[in-house]
Length: 125
Image (cartoon, rainbow, N blue to C red; front, top):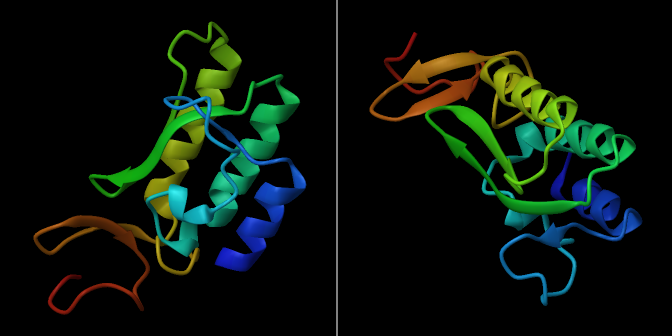
């Protein structure tokens, strides 16, 4: 999924709410997600599922950490199904190349990243 496709998706759902700054306009810029395009489809699928579960669309932060996706929602939400769905997406991210979205695995060349064979760094295999 490209940047433009993700932007179009976010706009189509009215954006997401910034959990830290609720007075700001809805988040419709994919750059809010501090990840590469390879995980956009994973994030889109997660958002669709969370919305179907009644999520308030409030997101605190989305980033890559130690090679995996981190998707932070309001910790006061008491919905185990919602938190389990977020956990599943975070777990799945360790099998998806951050760059292109193809199957990948954790690689370490001084920095942990989930990458496919094509996007791995020199000397990492």
